[in-house]
Length: 190
Image (cartoon, rainbow, N blue to C red; front, side, top):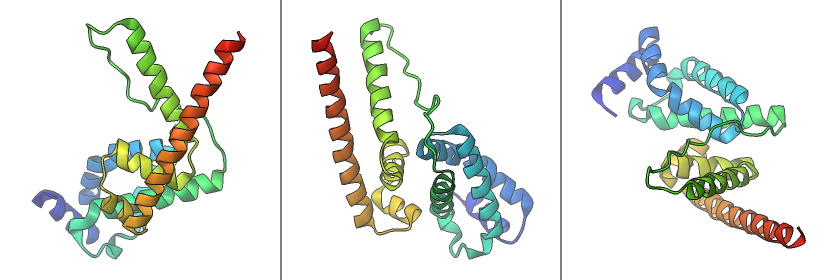
């Protein structure tokens, strides 16, 4: 954390709305992306972001160490995501949250299509994971957070995060293998 961010965090804790606005602008896109990847739904992710920042400001005095603002914010976002998704109890298809693939100019069009299809299958498999496994996968692979940071954000032990990642990898492998077998079966019957 740089000096400016620490200063803004301290000021926000004291009720400075300009400092809060500064922190909001600094983190809103990251929080939106994480919420979107966890929820798979743009409308829910916007609700998650809004509620996360409202809670951030409301409970600002609960943050004991200004140096730990970012993991504290992610913990609020994670728990808010789970609550909103549990409340809504609906699964909707993910809109366009995957990064657009920009094929190399030397890349063959077939390779581009295959990569795009593989990414789509992987994302569909991730969306099918149980919410806590999906959250761990999103934070680890899409946001490059360490297991220690994820544990803090998810409010659990680091060993629990490792276990969830292990189980999620196994579940993803099983789902992708099943899809592959399904695709081979369909090709044989056609």
